[in-house]
Length: 292
Image 1 (cartoon, helix red, strand yellow):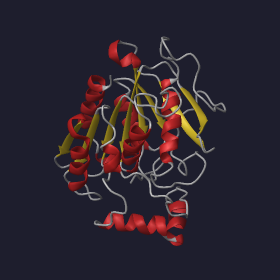
Image 2 (cartoon, rainbow, N blue to C red):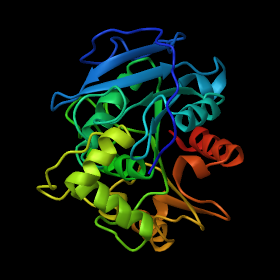
Image 3 (cartoon, rainbow, N blue to C red):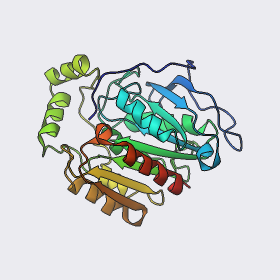
Image 4 (spheres, rainbow, N blue to C red):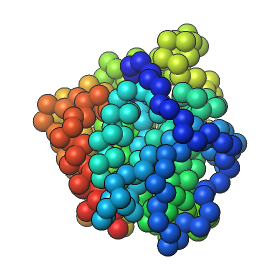
């Protein structure tokens, strides 16, 4: 779960957008920033930001797509900090999930958000980058797992593989749904499931939450982790995470098998706020080495 005040990111390009930039294969990646609204397959407008990375070596053809945690958005300071760290190793795309920030719709807390990520990944790949790495935190960590399972490396997404990812990093993610074993998760369930909680989310946390239950219940993160291969997967979790204890990342890594790697970080708490500069640098190095 994410929190904190919002900051402004200058909009270098603002235009309606319903697809990906043309001419992706064999052309040099774009060198100028862009910001636009994408349209998901179910018609939700998603605010997305593209920032070019270093114009050298492996970094030139790599783009990180950052999936924030619940109550975050593309303009939050902790999301901007993550983007700045990854920008040393490649281009970066940040965005706001549905119900968050300037994006439309309402949050389904990890269900239909997979459609948001698919639209953003296809947009990111359309700038000419040969390799795409999805990095998700908390709720976003569960979304990147499901996205990789549903939009495979061989173009199973029905769009010539435009929405596929080449490597996945899941930070502070749950392994299973409906977990209430910690006080923070019990508070989150109240926020999502009760009318008063959704009012707090809307006016206190600037997050619009859908009132309907999941129907059907989406593929669980641990089930998704077992279907990602051969895409490389890195699972990162702190040993002081107050939301999800260590059985969650261990289940994810075990389900991933030989294609998964687990980093248990000593002294680390939960998600973006607990991800220090040194950890982000290591994640960036892993992505450069493993993404294709």
